[in-house]
Image (cartoon, rainbow, N blue to C red; front, side, top):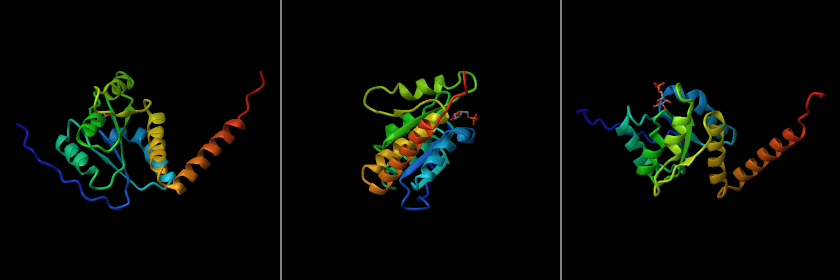
Length: 176
Ligand code: RP5
């Protein structure tokens, strides 16, 4: 039997941290760094760490159980393959969990997507697109959640959308 070695979750370095970004492996970082980049761009205090559902189950429980007392308002969780991490976090905390399916080696992340999106009724995980778009959009969604009670953040989100619209309107196509 595997001994139970509960890893204590250290207090957030910055007590203002409101969003946790967790992933099942350091190999997920290529994708999940795009969530972190968005949170940094918007000035949202966050933390990022590896929490593996199947390799660190006790740490997963500690992280989830401490999330609300530590002041987290959202957890962005990315994992690939049989991606239990977002669902198990959601099972152990009332803090909203935003799941990011990470592309996998053999099934290109369709397995990750199905694992995360098909939560049985009663324990929701907000599930985003496979890969980089999902990671970035999960962070933008977290920003939108926080912006409902933070007018400065709401203004930054409005400005982001305005810049994005202007960039699309300025797009040109090569001559046919
Ligand atoms: C999952 O297994 C991780 O989220 C990762 O996407 C996948 C492969 O992990 P490694 O074998 O690269 O550590 O737990």
